[in-house]
Image 1: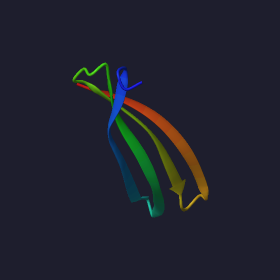
Image 2 (image 1 turned 60 degrees about the horizontal axis):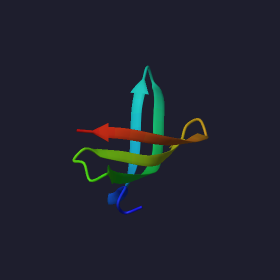
Image 3 (image 1 turned 90 degrees about the vertical axis):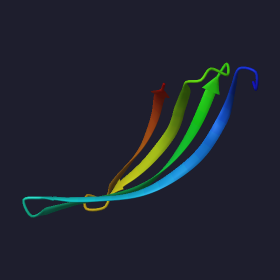
Image 4 (image 1 turned 90 degrees about the horizontal axis):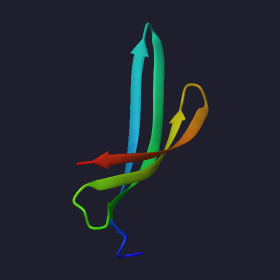
Length: 71
């Protein structure tokens, strides 16, 4: 598999967001894990990852996978 693609970088991020709209508070927190992948050793990289977010005020959470292509 090393000839086809390789993982260039692995990173994790944590976040906390908040905002207010007409005296209503919106808060969320979460974590994400991102893999930078090169395919066939071409310069553009793909970012593949997963993000977990928890809305603190509504007691709801979600897991969101994502794929991003960079030039």
